[in-house]
Length: 503
Ligand code: ATP
Image (cartoon, helix red, strand yellow):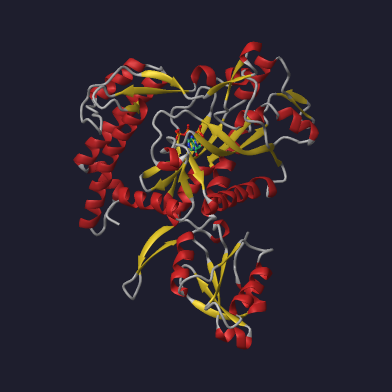
């Protein structure tokens, strides 16, 4: 594959061609940044959700799940700060008429300088055998100069964002000579704030309908149910509430496929702790979450933490787990220590006490919260793009294979009679019936066996079971492994023991 852009295009078309993801409303030319999951996509997505739910709710005795409604009382979004501050700074290029996020233009510019540094480092690595990267970064004049540029821009940018200084952001874009990638010009409008929440009306107009919002995050449904769950579940601090559900954001620039969507799904968990213990729990969740990712067997160098230097006013620690997508390292999951901000604000706006009486300390307090928040669709993209592989085989032929972790693969086993006669289809059906209660299986008798294997490779099926002449004689079948393409014979009663699929 020539470059990452081409690789990303190939991944998107593979997702469509093999029934994972379709553009929404495609026969009407689609709807920007909205996607539908197809027959294999929904299975992979459900498996991701199940993998998360199991790790959170099943393995932690002090975490329970809920499923709150998408529509919520409008005051919730006042209290949470979303009505006043859930904005992105927007800027238009007057020549191309294209719209951008001002912060993203600046961040991309910083990234380009970062890429230059990395290139210098790579070049030097090739040149010197005993290469000391830290020393090189300190002493190489070009690297030092680029790094200084990054530090200056980052400091200025953070200050402008913190002060909500929109004119300053525009000036920074001009000073950095950032041009529109489409028109190539620097003919920019002023920067404006744009609220990302979708609103709609509840009730008929005649009754004086109220403006309500499609939730931009699932977390608030957890906060407003904090006492309901704590009391009915007799939960003792520390405890968590988990939720998986849809969220909606009217993103200004929604590119990069399912990375940034206007309708997406989140898996969030709010962990309620004693005040003063939140940073200990923040560290705990950082470790737990990165281990969850790595347990999938994806190479660890694809993940990194990005600790936030400038924190939101209500947070006292925050980090992102970033993943190496085909377009570079980007946020996959956020872990935030949100203090007691949300519960306190809901106390204030609702007039209801949201306190916990701690029998160990004999105190009543508003708990502090550590949150973990990950997008299902972003996780899907991480897993899918990492699994996508175009291989050239020893005989010179090529195959496209999705090396998905077996527990996430949509179809776990394909059952394939070698030919459509001599009792093989009937025997294959028997094996299907035996495996169905355990795994999602697929029966396929169409086309030559090699083509059927390729079809299964392309959707990431870890095992194919082939029924052939020998099966009819001695009851053994062939198991073919997706990644190694190795084949071995086992007795048909042994199949379940031999398949190493954790679910
Ligand atoms: P970004 O900076 O990329 O916009 P964010 O910091 O606004 O993300 P959070 O509000 O922390 O994101 O949301 C938690 C998680 O939800 C993110 O880590 C991401 O996985 C997911 N997410 C957020 N916005 C979107 C979106 N528009 N499309 C898909 N997933 C999203």
